Amino acid sequence: MLARAVSHQARLVVMDEPTATLSAREVDHLRDVLERLRQSGTSVIFVSHRLPEVREFCDRIVVMRDGAVVAHDVSPRASEAELVTLITGDDSAVKLAGDVRTEQRRRGQVVLEVSGLTRPPLVWDVSFTLHAGEVLGIAGLVGSGRTELARTLAGIDPAQSGTVRTGDGRTVVLDSPQAASAAAISLIPEDRLRYGLVKGFAIRENLTLPTLRRYRARRWLPLPARSKERVVSDDIVDRLSVACSDVEQQASFLSGGNQQKVVLGKALLQDADVLIFDEPTDGVDVGAREEIYAEIDRLAQQGKAVVLISAEFSELAHTCDRVLVMRDGAVVGVLDQLPLTETSMLRLCYADGGAAA
Image (cartoon, rainbow, N blue to C red):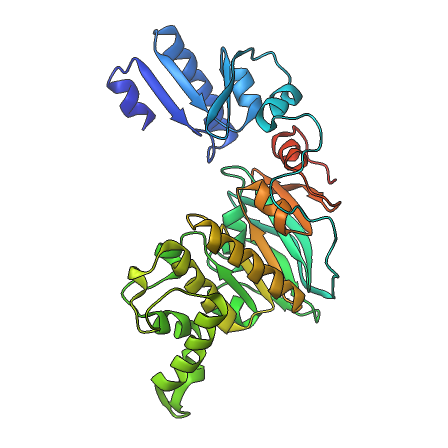
């Protein structure tokens, strides 16, 4: 893509997170390309969350927050701490909008212990424990490896190394979604239309698809009984307040928020001990968002372990008991002191070194 822009002799090149998935050697090469573009008189807009690169590559910096420019003509000699202050709008521990958690949920026993989980190039030596009855947040910026970690735990992209143990001490190999399901791990994926729904299926068919074996008309007959499917589907639709005409309504005709509820319902019917929510409120309205938060809280109160991945740090502060912060595929810090703040997460996201907090 960069070669195409250069070959067209563009006078302005806009690079949006160009180094998010590049290796160190490729970043060095990009640095050389940027210098050649500069010398040829080409202007470059370099959009990045990686502050060291912004300070090194750019002649001046513009900072945006909430869709508006809050600072322009900032010198690249500004410290990272000064830039973080401009990004967050405050140099203190800022509480976020909404009911930021100030009281820890009661944790139960460990239900999952992850040690040294690695799947190059975007998951490196990740270790953490997960307890029953808690909501663990995963924070990070673009390219930090959050979704890749979720996919590895869900068995979609098997790990290259590392171990995963369940609460009873068993080591499990998550080399397929079936293996993850057998280990009582369920994923609510980031892209509901691509990975979470069969759009041409009815709500009922989507809800029961992962657990069809339970609804057989006869034990020996590998066909589901629609009446059994309808009973559980009606219960989930009522529980999650899915706005629909009937469980036979096609999923493609639902709103984004109701589609997300159907994806969540599929996970609930699997009755997993660990539920991984990857950007569960992306593209849903405020009402659906609050209902999803309430369901996450109910699951934790029931003793389920929840992992919440979100690019919105306000969402993590609103919902989570602890937050792991990831950068470049690795965990660079753990925040476990409430109330959680946007500033504390951002400082770890942008920090040069990773130290647990």
